[in-house]
Image 1 (cartoon, chains in turn purple, yellow):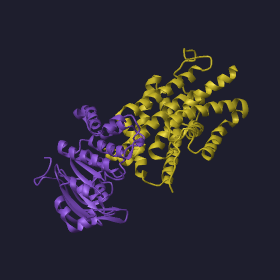
Image 2 (tube, chains in turn red, orange):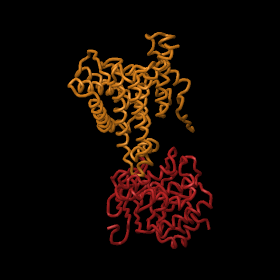
Image 3 (cartoon, helix red, strand yellow):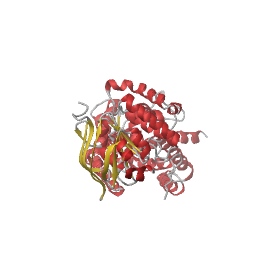
Image 4 (tube, one colour):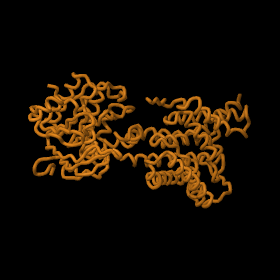
Length: 244
Length: 290
């Protein structure tokens, strides 16, 4: 029930997306296996962020996005979220004037009934994972540092207990030490909680180390795809994105 | 001195009404960045509904509760049916819709309930424990009712998941959608609350100013002045702004400019605040990078 026969949780086919008259995605196709981490690489403006926004129906899209057997194209963003897709947007999208704890409670907003009783327990789990959030639980989210905000954004997304986590450049603007910590925790979340992830990153090396499978976007089209190992070995990828 | 204190306290009682009209305005402004010009006429119409129910022999507080509920539902419905189609439209489109609503509700009040001035009962008997040296029973009673409304509203926003969701939707609609909040419904709820608060203000002010289709026109101006003075994005500022406007209006009316020019105070405050201090006393100063 949770995924179709070939094990793909997300199946994107011929996805187009546009902002006004500007076409950004020109029919991309890719699939994401259940329980795995997949990454989308590419230069600035290649359409990485737009791909995530298109999955969540935050831009005008056409084509097909099958998630867990359900067609997402044409649905409202909030309905996509209710199916179990959590999105950590670029710029993190935390509610800056609300407290850390309120942000986490909002993350669980659509969880209902029996499940609601477990929300406080899940909040404590987030604090255990990111102790710095626990220390700042009553603080306004806007007063957090960049790294803490990213941790809050990821925690808030996890409060949904999502089947799929979309991550838009979680390393952006953060110190290498913090980035390493966040990526270690992402790996833990993937293996321990079995959350599938679609990761968009500028930092190709980090992304390929974390993900099992990768797609390379160039000006709104899939230019290359394969396992992370294959892409890491690819000469053009090495030169253009890994700087070696 | 006695008279001076009396002016202040009765100013506070009026101020509570202005504050709640301001709060109704702020409630919609926060979520949509629009000022609902029809807020006053909607409140007047609600008050007429209460009047009609009481005329039919319904006990005051039952009519009060029913009017509150009807107003809430009507506010919600107005947003869903009339405002939703223009949610993404330019500001002027919305302003036109608000003015249209103002005219419609004003005309409906006159058409259904006619234009004669009507007495509206106060639920607080003249000689009750509420009467004190500086407050009449009705002033004290309406003061307490408005406070009760404000605190229940505060509790709703502070302690319930839906209240939290409404705050989130007002602050950052895009992120709100990303946690699954149906933002458009939150706007509708905001309209419902605004209409309900307006109905209480109408019912509380009607015994002193009498009920006719234009009852709230002046009060809405004081409401605008209160909201702007307090900072139009701050609910508490709106309430405190209302108190200040109420007291100021009373004192200036009694000692400086006379009762005839009272309404001018509101206009002067509106223009003064906008030119000298656009974010009001407690509003957030918005700085934009250009």
